[in-house]
Image (cartoon, rainbow over all chains, first blue to last red; front, side):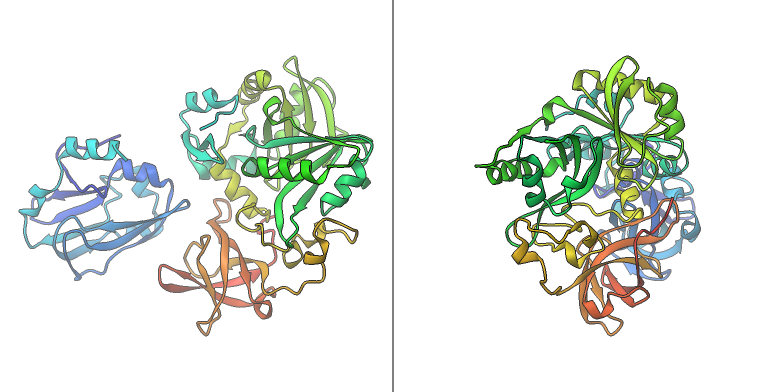
Length: 128
Length: 353
């Protein structure tokens, strides 16, 4: 399982990346996309919505099942990856790149430190 | 969990394994369900179905017994032929759906779902008491591999010792494959042309290997489900249950007008709901348990199975619906995560090979 060292992770399998411009990009991990199987539908939040860390904001649906996605950080949704409407398989093929789900303008960057690092997430996922 | 004789093969191929009816079975292999589904529709797929149950019913009374115990008419089978059938309980519902093969005048092989092996065997044994026939559970002595898809006759034809050109649908023949004795049945659960290959458990790996080497694509239970659903076939535990009256479903043709176990509770009973096919007309995947609503928002039914077809990309499923809405073309909604998504009633199959 690919678990990039530079990202932060939630136990619910979302990853968070603090960008140069202060935005936080969010997606789901390689482990999560593998568990889900071929993704077919995404329900993304509206841009401008205020979210809290741990709040359910999206749904990723595969043939097998639908999975709730929780924002790992608090803030305001600043962008969503609308390319996923036509290419949902990007989540499977590039979970950390083309398959990003949304970005958040964070209200508290300190929350990132409360997320797991790569080793912590790998250990947590191994127990599932 | 139990293992079939092909467990090692699945592990070697990197399958994602799941518990199915107490067996450690492949859900899919590395390329995924969509790939496997498409391989069956365009080429040839290979399924390990050794977990299924094989029960022999043999003896002078076997024909009249099975005619009474099941809904179809096994007595009408010629030797070496099989038929789709169902096993009724005494409360107007079903114990299982199954295939019955006539191997001799008084010798039948019943193939049942893995999850219902004990129930089917126990029921047949009890019902046969006092009759001149024996019921024997042979499941542990049989491995079963399904080869399905338009390329399968050519593929198997090259490998089978005897000529299979004249093997009709639902017919069986004995032969050899890679030096191993097999019985081949031209049956399947995918809607494609295909074969189900019975062999000894100790020969299963050899049969599997020679078929994989001939370019059959290994397929797991995930694709088995999307294929059967697309082909309009029911799955016990979803469309068929202990309380399902098959006369209220598209599979009513199985039920013959003759004496059978539990007939009084099944025949002539009015249907509170009818089982229909649904195709979503707005984006959303119907899943077992989701409510079906009328366009006015009344609950009128429930989904029994649903998926997104890897081939047609339609979202399809089966559902019980109130009789007034059970006509082809009726508009309904399926409640998906709190929202009503539009769907229309269709007559299965959802796809024809």
